[in-house]
Length: 259
Picture 1 (spheres, helix red, strand yellow):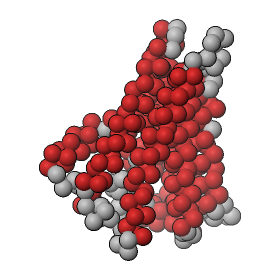
Picture 2: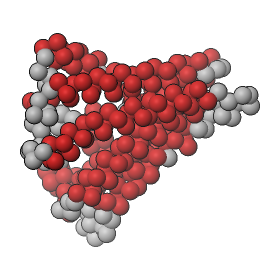
Picture 3: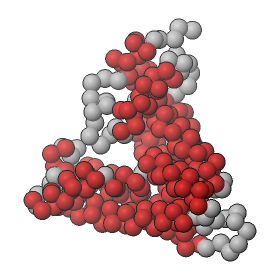
């Protein structure tokens, strides 16, 4: 079976604009994963594997970050990063295989979004359960599990707020939103939005960034011999998620996206 080269694949699966999408391409995809995914694509594009099958496996990898993070110490944090990176790889591969095979479907788009929701939630819930110290032998403090779940709920709501713009516009008979409409009409809100975008603190509640943060905190806690920084991280991410949920909602209502 002929396996296309990376040079043959690139113009088809990476058409102009794929890596430049403002909200559709993750920095890790632009930095390294899109190059790695091309090497995987060539082994899959001429098989019977479908894009939707890859999306199912992608979602499973993201969900498995939760039990991975339940393993204590640095080992669990490393395994959590591995599962999230596998999720990201397959998130690139499924769309690239779809472009090569010309197998596009609304179901595939829907499944991809469900996978993104579940991966973010799994990482943050797993983070909270790590902080609760399930295997420490002492009393389990479920406050940390609650805060991790609160962060997960916020991460999901932030995505839902964006997705529901499209739902509202469709039900109102309006075309898809333009990028320029995302800018708040108030100059003060626009400045705040640009400041938040520059700091990118909101990205910490996304599965990829959160998993890397969890690993860093696990290493520091391993040196200290306790869970202080893991627990501090859970508090910070829960606060960011709640704040960003509210700010994102205000940003949408203050923009032209619903006009």
